[in-house]
Length: 266
Image 1 (cartoon, helix red, strand yellow):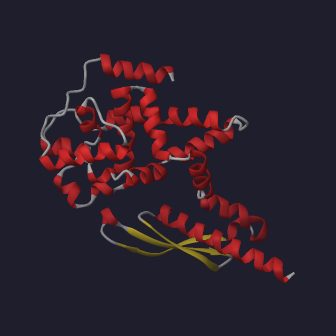
Image 2 (tube, helix red, strand yellow):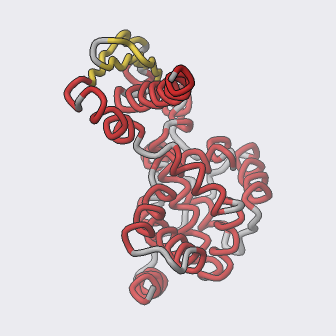
Image 3 (spheres, rainbow, N blue to C red):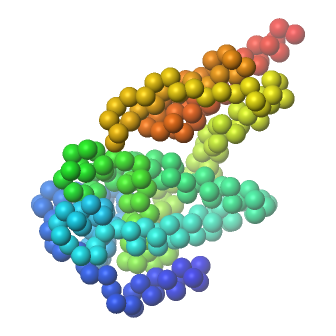
């Protein structure tokens, strides 16, 4: 935690990043106030909140200087990792380093952060260029992930670690329950491979792109997973990886339903 404190102190004491110009419309100001209610925290320094929600495209669009959320994203990533590590360390006193590292990794990965961001409806408050908003850039996974980490960094600078920890853990709710749910859904392709390798061999899994549609910024993929040539699951996603993972989850569920039936026949 010391290096996080030193970094935050340096960010405070070095020549500061220029505060964002007050170029917000009344609608945007209202969106930020509503977001504060949803996240359960009211900023003392409103410029930190505005910076945390400012996508790089907005800076160029409004011809502002140095006010996007990239630096806060860097800080927030470190703070979030520290909060999760501290909580997991206390929550699971008998787990080894490997298990704790995996738990922190799945809770801090992009997919989970995007779920949190959507739960908080961050997309309604993100400040972007008009063209990005028109192409639904505020709902893009990478945008939401960056904004959530930036928000954590902004809270840390505004109120310190204790207040930030309390808010972030509130977002997660029952962390043990959340973790159990997330781990069950973690690395479905790896779990499928492990499950079937003794049955039919690891080289009998194929992922096939069935369909690819939509414009480049809103591409949708349909992928089927075949086990020994037999289709076991079909997944949809905004990337091939996402679609493959969804197909693997469906194949796992299909196998879990089939195995008990086979046992009963015996």
